[in-house]
Image (cartoon, rainbow, N blue to C red; front, side, top):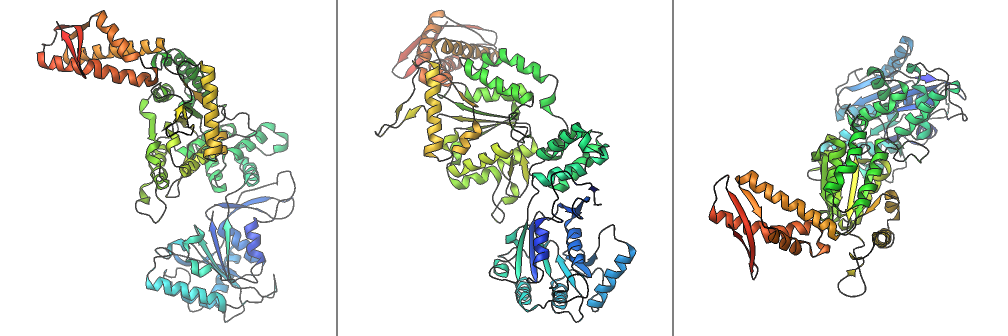
Length: 631
């Protein structure tokens, strides 16, 4: 990647190099080996001098810049694929290249350059030559992909273990080298291990060894991203940000929306935007494509506003007797559709499009409303994904969501949640009965709700910025009073306002006092939607809808026209709707046992022909057995 440059943004002079590079440079006199781990594939901001231009350099280019100014003649790089080479930036002149190659040849006359075959024996010989050079030449060796040298830090072949033992000894017997220019103080010819994680190298190699320094390479902070965003505006025709308010605002938004991404990712996003013909104000679309890998955005479809408007009429027909819950849910969806989720914050957020916490009695429509939301937004009920959190009551069960950690059996498969969202980012995800999950698993939700992303067991980042998360809970329905069994905290005779107040107070108590997770409750904010008990009128409507479904199903499956006497319907209605605690699901279960089962028995025995008219004239109950009378 060629270096990018521009004038430094306002706000004071930045350091010449990133802190990790300055730490590396400062400790060259005292450490013979370094482990640079973490964000090693990124590009890094470098300022040539105070107030001067900024450049974006890959890690190896940055290391060479640091070493060159300290009097080093060359930087050698060894990787497991290509072997040994002399590293020079793409912009290096022919004279600089010849000088570095000549220095490497004088220092290592017995090793063929370039293209030494990658082997531990050749690498061992090279490191020994550098640690105690025959000539006073400063050189450094970067071992790229050091994480791949051995099968694992705790599972090594004998030759791999011997190699690292040699490296540990070499770190202590290396001698520093003086130089006529640059820094004249004797400096080591360092071995620089470039690793993905600090633990990829044997712990016994680095632990307690003062000659080996471990330096982490962090992901860029907001200031780095803002400076990089200004660098990357030039291809969009922006040359003076101080006089272009729209471009300055686009820069700030770009930096905020790339939270968690690398500077190299920002470069790739602008390339993608130019390739797609997007303007700088359309960079959020390029970010979404880069993160999610999809062009189509259901949240920006023209018909979404109309569908949500229609939902004000259709959803109450589907989720009966919950006007307050339906209204609040639709308000949150309207906010999400307009892109106003988190609008009160000072910067754009990558949090999920919508977060809903459904609380209330069982069987009142919480799950049904989640399905309705999926159908409403994405026109596809299969975009609805459900996790029963009672299956995640143990701490290790969280591996099912994001995948097992590296080194454990099955970690290559990833997690059920992360795989599903990676495959289809536009989803409604239901976490049912979340209070039954292990508290450690709830910590994963904290990351999703705060940052809108989650890293799975394979190290891949999954983004939830286009998903709607729905949590359901029965918290607050019952409370402990010192007896063996909890007692009801709310009951059907209470007004909705009192039910809502009591349940929210119980939810607050559970997260703050019982779980000790008030920060998780804060992420839900005012998105807690309390459902009411099923009232008499709603129960009658639910009964009517389910009863009609039974009659229609008999006609569709058997071709039989079913008539039921009004007296039979009235008796069934009373039996099925007497207990408001059971909710809509209880009405369906009662209908199945009181009517569907005896009807199926009677039709099976009589076996009427298709097209026949069958009339149900009565219900008869003997003990637990219910029968229907047909004519």
